[in-house]
Length: 155
Image (tube, rainbow, N blue to C red; front, side, top):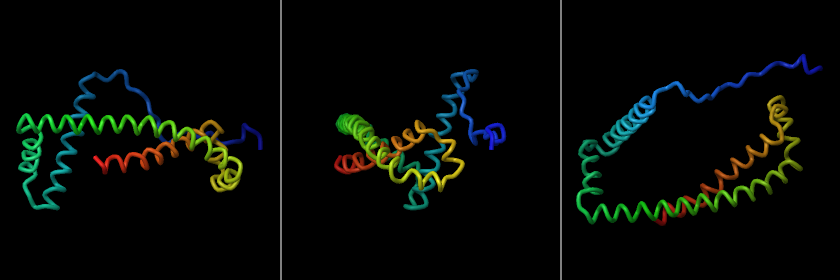
């Protein structure tokens, strides 16, 4: 089979930056997303607890901003969580790169032929660079999850 006989494959999704959109369109989309999240959470609160979601939101707002001591406590907790997330991000990035190189080496030598047979044509489309990027991304997500959950539980 010659190269000219192969099918031309187009991607399922095409992502492109829309530079012609006005800036306020992005603000409107984000505001709609926040309102939709509040509505969905309100429906869940009403369904699971039977309480008025507006009263629950008011209680949460008062619990955080009701007194200067509460604002200070919230600031301390936010600072701790931000510090932990920064540390976890740095550690997980370093570990994921090391783990990904290790896993990619093992995978390429032992499991890659079997996976390539399973995937068939899709494996042919994936070059070595894309394959290693996929492994790196999966390893990064796994390491981040393993490191972040215990830190989040402790705080």
